[in-house]
Each structure stands twice: as structure tokens, then as C-alpha cells.
Image (tube, rainbow, N blue to C red; front, side):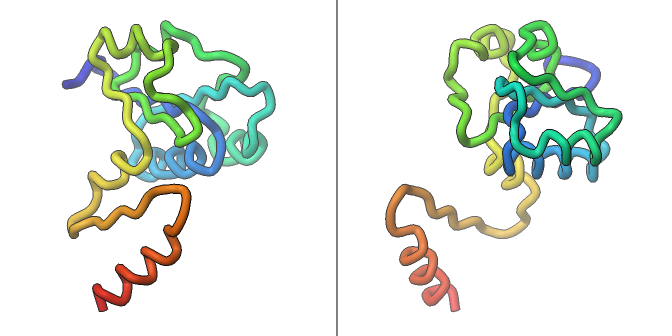
Length: 131
């Protein structure tokens, strides 16, 4: 499944999720770069302070660099089916979200609760059932 020999990961989006994935990769010594289509994304200053040696590209996504990735991690606000990822998909580069990325580390069952309404109620119910 590996597409490159460098192990490079590409993070798309520098919101809370992108920053948390960057911290995770740094902790694991995984090489990565980051793209955000916004010129001045949130957390840019924090990113530059915490990751001074990591390339962070803003304003657009470089197709060549994107297709050099072993894996692409997209933030929740990014459409993983967007046309910008077509060439990467053609090269069978995995495109995943943060939930999938972090779930790989889990050694216990996972209960995921998603949706736009009722998450707190369902979370409380699941917690009561688990206890």
C-alpha cells in the first residue's frame, strides 16, 4: 500500500484537527508537510512556532508534493472526494481522516458517535450503559 519510500504524510487543513495530527506525527517521528488553502489559517503562528522545520504551504495545494505522499490526512472540513485529490487517488495514495488515523492506535473497542444533533445525549446514554 506504500506509494513512496520516504514515508511522507501530507496533512490538509490547519485547524484544530490539522494541528493535533501534526503533534501526533512529531511525537511518532513521522515526516510530514501541511497544506491549507487559506492564506492565513487558524493556528498558523502556533504551527510555525512548534514545527519550525516542517514545510507549511498556504493558499493552494501543490499537486506534485501531494502525489509524493505515502498517505494524505484530511481535516473534517475538507471534502476528501474533491477534485484536487484525483491524481492522488489514481496513484492509490490513501486519503484518510483523523478518526481513522488515530483509531489505528486503539487497542480496545471504539464507540463512535457522530451526527449533527443529539451527540451529548447519546454519549451520556452510552456512558451509562458502559458503566
